[in-house]
Image 1 (spheres, helix red, strand yellow):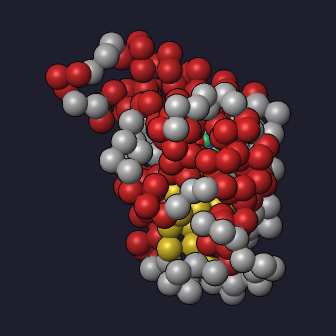
Image 2 (cartoon, rainbow, N blue to C red; image 1 turned 135 degrees about the vertical axis):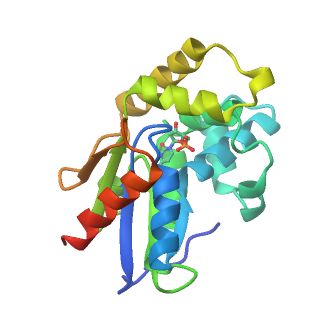
Length: 219
Ligand code: DC
């Protein structure tokens, strides 16, 4: 995951998609990438993989030193870890993401993906700070949101029925993670001033995609 020097800007389509947990930004980003035939980077997966690495070495994700060490050692294979989508990985990700050293270690990789996408045509990056910090000059920015109750319900439905905790417990976790992501000092979750705000509380995937496509075609 080592960064290369001085990436030149790509002429391709670059779209920044940000938003809180379970707002639908990952699905939207994947769908946009497929539609336009461009690459997709789920930047949350980078933070999740760092969080899991920290736990694997017996470290505390709240510790900036071990977290930065693990961010600098991140390898592509870490992104295929079977526990990447677990609640444990999400919690650890949200903690390691508060450290400046971790964010700095992951920044160049994300920028290089946008400027030199593997397929060479363009890229959609989704995360929390793509439009504000990673790609502040991105020509297209979408901030996807939904009410905490709607997002908790989506997360809850994704969990295996047999091991589902109470919906209220998931909603409390969603709100706690929102607060941590929004209130952290470095690169907090917030819409870029020039982002298109897309509230998916009452929208299904097709309707959210149609709204995003309409925004892109207006530009
Ligand atoms: O999108 P996700 O649930 O996979 O993200 C996991 C955590 O990673 C999230 O709580 C905050 C952090 N994150 C971040 O700080 N910046 C990003 N660009 C992406 C994710």
